[in-house]
Image 1: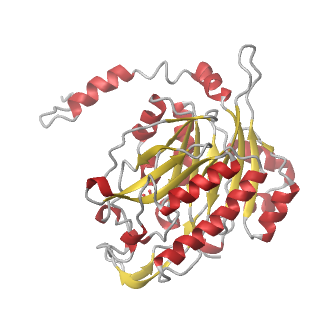
Image 2 (image 1 turned 60 degrees about the vertical axis):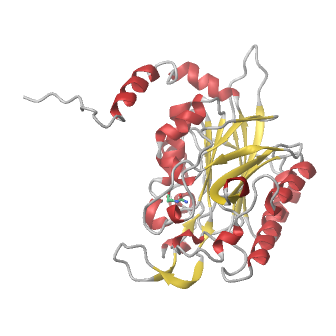
Image 3 (image 1 turned 135 degrees about the vertical axis):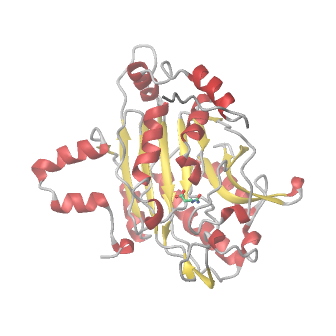
Length: 384
Ligand SMILES: NC(=O)NCCC(=O)O
């Protein structure tokens, strides 16, 4: 069975590990067992009819005396592109709006308050090609582009915060392109945008050809349902990036991604989960699904034969909690909607137990890092 036909690790465990041991295997691999979320039958039926994976889980917190629970439902959407990559640009965008719009409708049936889509969700992940046309034509204004206007409609219709990662064209700065997540409030206002801070230079991820490192820092968006931030894809390999969103107060950090099996799959279940633990917050990792073929072959200077695809985008979107527990992942092969209900009180409860923020010694690291980035830095090494 090849990587692109392998449904999920969870499925294999369920099929082959005896019932008696399965619970313990799951505890060791995924942390405390999560209750399944009771989803509306209409949502379950719609997911079957529209052929996507639908899963729902609950992250509970202990009851407190002074604070009521702060319960929020979060939806993560992973999907394949709908049309071939050489279809007209606008048709590709509209087809993706339609597909994802239908999935958002199901998210609404599940009571989702905040939904997040995958990285550059309105387009094929064409940055491997290094070609300009037609890919730069997918770029849109974050404030009032076609996709943002579409998300505003969704947000108003479903009273839902929408996190929409797009390729941004910034007309105010000479038409510069950015890799940007637009955050639309549940009232339909553009709350703001967060740009990708770290750009990959690995494998076929030739993204540095298209856009620069983001300049929006570590913005946190205060929504009606909690404080959220967006750490786009490759930023998940940078612990300081997660840390800074958390330092600015993020309670949930989304990680909309596009990554392929041979490159990153063993790292995927670890990185966002570790960030949730280290920063006493929830993290939501979202990856696209499927294999996308391009008309022209490309190479990436790594000795590989010219090829027309990136490899398999393995989906497997999941949510991790500050106590180290995590939801099972969505399918590796199918579109999917993951709905999780989380009590944000868990963040402080875990912080009070483990005290990573309190014991973090950030002033010591700030001081040392300030010196370490100087050109004349002398490493502190004792020699005989
Ligand atoms: N989209 C993106 O940044 N991908 C880079 C590869 C990875 O981080 O796994």
